[in-house]
Amino acid sequence: MSALEDKGIRASEDRGALARMVMTLLDHWKLSTEDQAALLGIAASNRAALARYRRGEPIGSSRDQYERVGHLLGIHKNLRLLFPQNRDLAYRWMSTRNRAFDNLSPVDVIREWGFAGLLMVRAYLDRARGQ
Image (cartoon, rainbow, N blue to C red):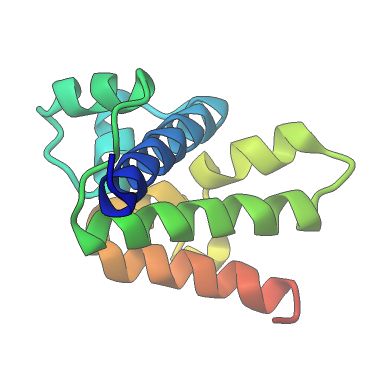
């Protein structure tokens, strides 16, 4: 096996681990299948992709999906740092209405605004942490 082939296999394994990680996070957030798909930027009807990611098959190769996953994991990190003693609140926050988002939940903001909504939620939490 060449070094290039070995690197490709490792990258695929890394993308599979990333897929499992983000699916576990979405489960912790107790989101519907439709909301999970919206946060990942895939069609709500694409349950097959969600099932593949849950099994650890590599997350899509598009830059959009990588960036979405990165922001979702960043949101999770912010929530864990903001609410270190209250894991339930950290997991519930994404589906809780928030005055900062015109009384929409962060998930609603992302569903309505797409990638821009994801950036809005991430930026809000970054500011809350003083970043």
